[in-house]
Amino acid sequence: MIFALPKLLSLGLRTPTPMAAITSGSMWPVLRQGDLIFIQGIGAKDLKIGDVVVYRNQINDTFTIHRIAKLEKEFITTKGDANFQEDPPVKYDNVVGRAVSVFKKPLRIPYIGSITVFASNFKNSEYVK
Amino acid sequence: MENSGNQTPQQKKESKIAKPEKKEKYRMRLSDKIIAAVLAVFFICIFYIVLDANKYRTTVRIMPGEGMVGINPSTASLDFGDLSRGASAVRRVALKNGTNLPMYVAILKIGSISDLMDISKNNFKLKPRSEEKIEFTVFVPASAEIDKTYSGRVYLFKIPIF
Image 1: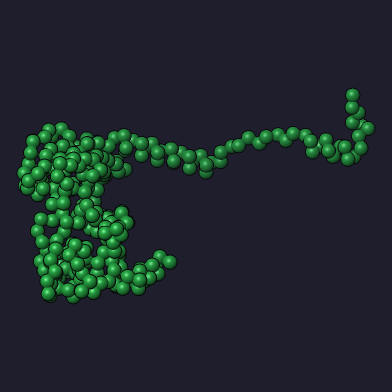
Image 2: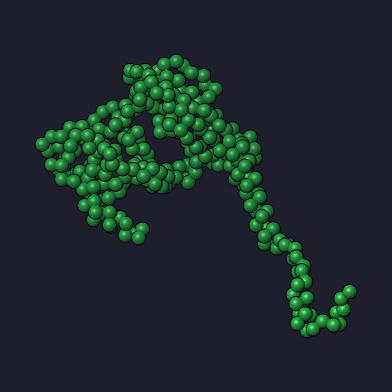
């Protein structure tokens, strides 16, 4: 069941990455560090300003979860709610999906994603070194 | 007076059954005693660690504007005073290990301020007879609510390593 869940979610949400852990506070207070969120695959024409999207960040090859601030022909511009500046424009191809929302708020499971965060923090802590 | 000699074999059997059984006294086995002792030591250790932990009340109030720092608060507690969006404040706590045992230091932050606070060092080993300074930084993000006070508590646990 545990092993089948990501595959089932992947099929249901039409994306190869159906879940993501929040590792920073850039979307605070909507999303908090350690939250687990669900991602649904979405077409470029269905994206709207204000949607919380997940995209592959080409600069550091990681996933970023931010809110759409501007929609242009070839690019979208996102911004973290807690950030003061907008992110560099992102191509539509790099958008992985949109955060699954309930009552216009991203659906999140608190603390579950922190297992990943804790593991990475512990790995980098001095005690391990 | 009853004469037991006159009892039938059936009556004899019944009187045997009716006899109250002697209660067996429960005695702890050696393994039970060891488990109880280990659990007692474990709980005493946890109790000591929790009791010995340094506890700090933390608070920050968000004021209008951007990048401004308000009243300079006292350094006695982790009071970050009034900060506007984009501003940050640092408080330092000196942690001293006066014992001959190394200590494992773990810091726990709770409350609404915990998302805004960054700790310079956490989950580390403090050498015997040494001192370490820990920095607590609060940065107010763009999405912080103006005129709201974010507060919480910080627990600094020191666990002796044998």
